[in-house]
Image 1: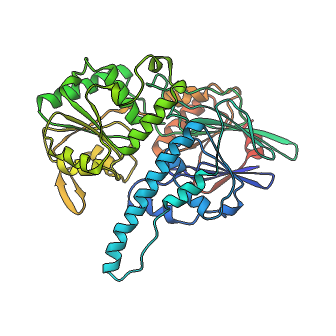
Image 2: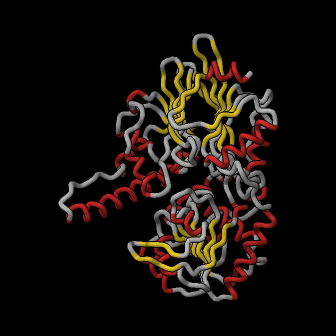
Image 3: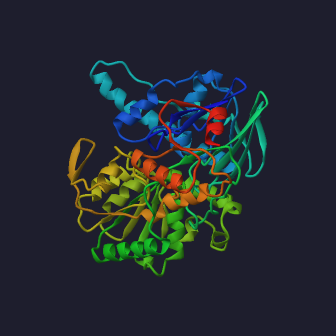
Length: 468
């Protein structure tokens, strides 16, 4: 009965954890590594296991850093079921197909360059066909429904409050008469965040695998965050510029639209035209609307998520419509992917606006090391897009209070609901965040706190005995 940490160990992305019980192999998440060029290249590495020997997968939520290598897994031999929440299944239909499209497009672009250098072509990381194949292996499991996934392994999902369908996973394991309960937090949302319910709590576990993205900081209050956004819109209006918001297509885009509707008059948004420039975000918004039963009471009292949510909201679907936005010099709020500026339509908008002093650039989510978004947040004076060096003149804002992740206090509070302070291992965080959270958890009485390292194996029976 073992767990091995194969991704999101000492870093935020690439979640992948291998659980072995009764000689069966169960994978929890199978995500892409995100970041700079070096990080992206790691996605082409072979899996550190034989995919044909994986018996089942548990997928905590749809974000690509948790789901993005599933098509590769199936193509290389995995034929078992993928257990996940119904909303996650539906979001993955959108997100994985979009990911495949981008990989195919990137391979085509690189192969044109390689052909000129008389180099052999490369294959895309995966294709649309690979996505279709793995989607056929998805098995939907609702929250609170205990389900056997393998002999000696059963799961139950609870709402993680991170994005639609995101799940905390309780995993009951039994081998040779020994029983252990492992709880994977997945990505935990903030209590009080718009649209979704607060993260549910779990009280019993022998071993906890806890995310630590914001383990070293506290988010700004919701009130201060809303005031900051109001001030940014007022400043941008006075400067007669545009507002660019790189946004994750799933979760953050829907939250932004919701907050704009809630604060439409307070923020004087009637002065703006709001463009959701992301086909994937548009599709995700429609999925969010279908799962209204998962919204909190306040969100259910609002108009349904969609284009009618704001009177001046435009869904931008085609590339031609997106390019036309570059002609607008003021009065436009453009929400576009990707959230870390690693691809998508936001890069074209940056090329046309990042040098303009009158415009504003608002980051509303985590920016991984090595990404263009992280460089801008860290104060880069210039950036390079498609070989062109561009001076940064736009006013850059980081609005941390909109994070879809719990902060240090939220993580410690969630862990504090476990009786007996079980051993915990920290994943999905950068080293400084993990060290800070470890110290807080130990101070609060955790039996033991381990910071996972890549490929580290833990014997659950021994770890739990030592922790007790």
